Length: 300
Image 1: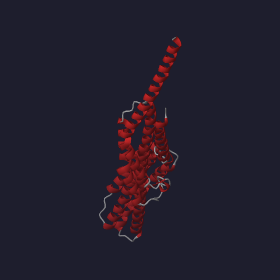
Image 2: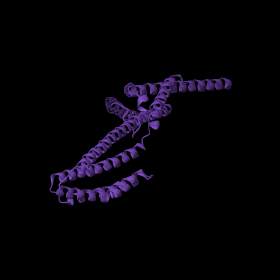
Image 3: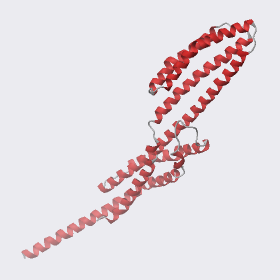
Image 4: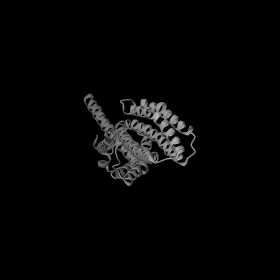
């Protein structure tokens, strides 16, 4: 009789354990099915993100360097901005929000879900950082172009002024022009010396301070000295106008130089070699996640 009871008890335990295991398996399947249903909108957005990202020519983008001559057509750059602004960034932002709001209670699924959220984080970082880098590149191209224009304007004004100075003049014209030339030459050497300071091995902050605290005051002083001379003849007025345009252009030039320095400083926070790989890494993390989710059904 006792033997029968022991056997009966063992059979009950085995049967009970089997029921628990089946129940656990069913719960996992139910949890997974519910989870997949809640995540489907996120997966749909991921597909859209992948399709949009494929439109980025990463081979071309990896050769875009801040501070160099423009190698990217404006229409290509605008196309990249459109993809990032209208697709990748908003999709990644919404994916992150929806994934964070999906309730997960099963421990195995929680682990997988955390890995998926990491892939979304990488997708968002890639899009936002690439957008910032391309914006920095665009600003550097615009500033370099502006600097070239300023340089050409100064050169043209100087040529025109020198031609006027070399012409024959009346005594009154000569007196006024000589006075202008003397004032200009008095500070020219100092200006040139201070300008070469920007070529030295100084920090960006030091160069910016030099432009603000040394070069700009010197240029303002030069402009004020030129304006202080009484000019009555037309030739004298022409020489003064061309000279003033030169120094005002110098001011604009150095303001843009300071802007370019800030662009280089911004670029230091966004390196393409750190940005571009995030897209591929996010894809690998996501692919592994989807495979592991599929494997959940086979778990007992």
